[in-house]
Amino acid sequence: MNWGGIAGLTIVLLVMVVSLLAPWISPHDPQLQNLDRRLLPPAWAESGDSRYLLGTDGLGRDMLSRILHGGRISLGISLSAAALSGVVGVSLGLLAGYFGGALDGLLSRIADVQQAIPFLVLAIGVAAVSGPGLPNLVLVLAITTWVNYFRVVRAEVLAAREEQYVWAARAVGCSSARIIFRHILPNVAASIIVVATLLIANMMIFEASLSFLGLGVPPGIPTWGRLVSDGRAYVSSAWWISFFPGVAIFVTVMGINLVGDWLRESLDPRNT
Amino acid sequence: MLRYVLQRLLHGLMVLWGVSVIVFLLMHLSGDPAAVLLPLDTPPEEVAAFRRQMGLDRPLPVQYLFFLSRVVRGDFGYSYHYRTRALEVVLERLPATLRLAGAALGVSLTCALPAGVIAALHKDRALDMLVRLLVLIGQAVPGFWLALMLMMLFAVRLRWLPASGDVGWRSLILPAITAGSFSMASIARLLRSGLLEVLGKEYILTARAKGLSSVQILTRHALKNAAIPTVTMIAIQAGWLLGGSVIAEVIFAYPGLGHLAVTSVSYRDLPVIQCFVAVMAAVVVAINLLVDLVYAWLDPRVRLYGNGY
Image (tube, rainbow over all chains, first blue to last red; front, side, top):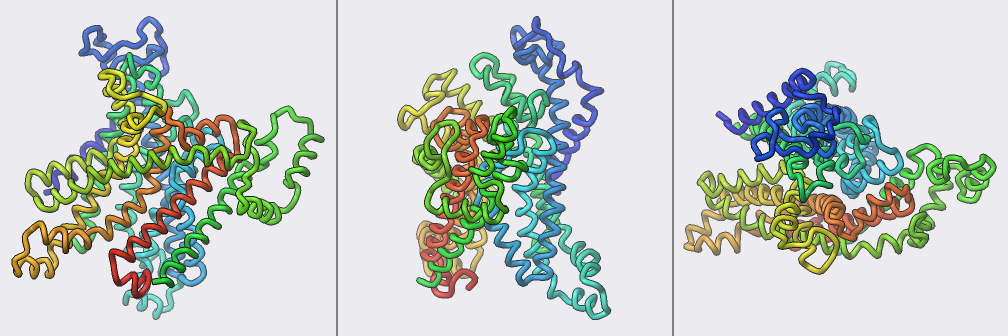
């Protein structure tokens, strides 16, 4: 029994369900401002209000509702960015690994160049010219992370290319496309799933970091990173504004990582 | 050995050339650079004159060659905001960032190395569990959030350390912990698994059989072999440390490159941004080169037969 994996899966499922149900289970409208009730501490604190479980922000908006709604957007961005990055990285990895030669050389050099530019540095560069917006954010995240998939898939395909089943498929006259998609892809799928899981966790942190720096989502959209950022102005007076969204990121990322480690251990044939 | 060094050097130069292409394309990513650079209400004839003056009316490859010939001479153009050469603006801030990233690496290694060794030596016992739990936490804590919490606790509540600016070494402590937190966990984790693998090898059994103490086995035989994947990890972490220092700099208002870059985004100061990306990439390439040389020192096979042995 892998208790860590089970705990992780429970966390991930819980976060996903709660985020999906956010519009129905939030106690308040996340955008509703109420200046009479601004900067209320959490309910259990001395001057807390039981209707605002996690307190309110500088404009009197309910933190719990904002965190629940923020989860939808943060998860949505991370999942779509990891998917887009996966489509690019996996396809290029399959091509480079299967065909090799000049194409592989070119793609591998591009991957080297990409890795020489730290994620946040490239993201700042791209954000500077592309401006804020959800599609741009997903694009930036995908552009800066496809190499993760590319390296793993390329290495696995390089090995798989020499396997007997590929030779057999070629001998009976399968086309390259058919060999790649019907025979090789299913065999590297396990690794892709592991990379994707761990990358989703990183995406959550990347997205939050960019939104925190003001380079991610446009103002007004509550993602977890932006919520932490909103609390910066109140560091000395209202700790709860930054604290709880950060805990949400932390718990979710830890859950995804636990699932990722579990998958890596159970899908890797060397561990059995 | 010389062949190996030259080969790595050439590879580094090729990567830098690739970076120059990316930096050049950044300018054109938004479509029309003139639209980014000029105010919205510029009359069309002025836009046309500007395009001619900047060479924007020429084909892209020609523009790139002009760009490259300027860049290799260190000319990234003038900063729109600071009104001086972009390279000067960036290089002026570089030492502060390198100091911070260095301190972050120091913090991260001082915590990660003992933690990794202790965990490996106490496999599956209480201390190992504790380290693994800390690693799990360390990899999930967002750096910027940790920074805010540290700031609340040590700067606002306890008033032990400065909350912002650069007033000597005490200003480095909180940013360094922030920037080092992520790589700390990864390095500890990798060192633990690396050591465990090495400790299961037969030559360790031999060393034990001929009566070496645990300390001797660890320092003479195990650590150097486990260091190879760990050093690779540190090279990969170089990017994380630099990225992490961007965040730390912004939060703690530390006057380094990251702080400069984020403010330059709001000014749309493209020359400074381009120069920032290029300089950061150059630092990463330099670190990787250094790590390749450390490899050769650690592993005689690399020295003799080159990278792939």
